[in-house]
Image (cartoon, rainbow, N blue to C red; front, side, top):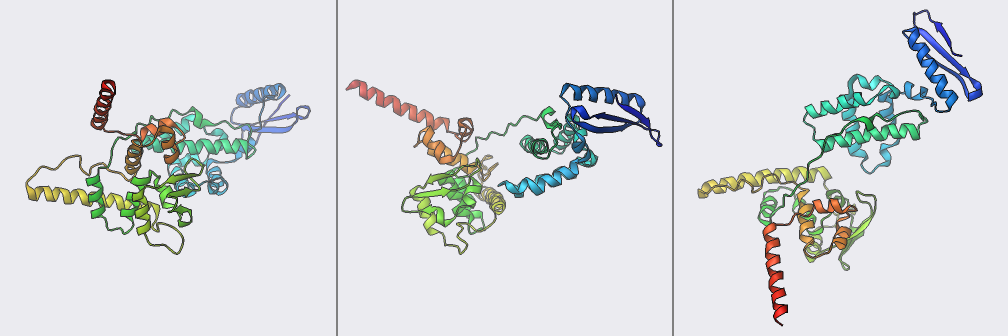
Length: 358
């Protein structure tokens, strides 16, 4: 039977001792005696039924301390350590007073309010989902690895925004040439052309080293990719020519500038190219195409490359080139031109007629 005592502060302390069930001492303080008695009855019942889990560690550990421990112990083991550190910083800035609350007291409603704040701030659904996934993993690690066996994961109770970010934007050859002509970067032209020739991810190409490039065999080996596996990418004749034109760096890397620098340089080049295009149209007294060099992203080169390669390779070969494990994700990167498909259908029809006539 629990012991209920009144403290000098006027609060009520419930003390449970059930050594025969493996619980030597469990105590908690409440403002009301009724709350102390209710907690004691519930806890004793759970202990006797064998379903009780010790949550004291989760109650003592604040969300702030848990985020710090996660960043020190878990984040460094990830390939995305740098970007994840940035996400953790954002969570700390936005969580407010929630940071000082024990993990056991953080519930789905708390995280839902954080989600709603990000929505009001205009954060994209995919970004919100990634932030919530990080918080969910934190609670999972705390329960499985940090000895907080009774801790529940409140992130599982949060409804996440639907992501509708599928893109069908393709980069045309005239657009690519205009972007390359407008850039001031010495490496960006080769970088974007190789993206279009190989369908590599931006990070994969940026991490490429000369020791993994085999020009005689026309292959490039990627030892670490986004999905955690390695793969070997075939190189087209155009890709080989581009690689041969590049200088060999002393550090062994194919490209030297930072990965985010490529994205920023590409964005600046797109804006410059669009401005030059509009100026040329004004000089020629022609109306600019509203879609030309508008809403173009560096990642669109992977869409373009995948779509072009699909005209040559079957699905399984294409998947081995792009590194997609999920065929549904691969399909998102295949954006054929309906008019081009119609031409191919007409061509197939003529072939069938010729065969029948024979």
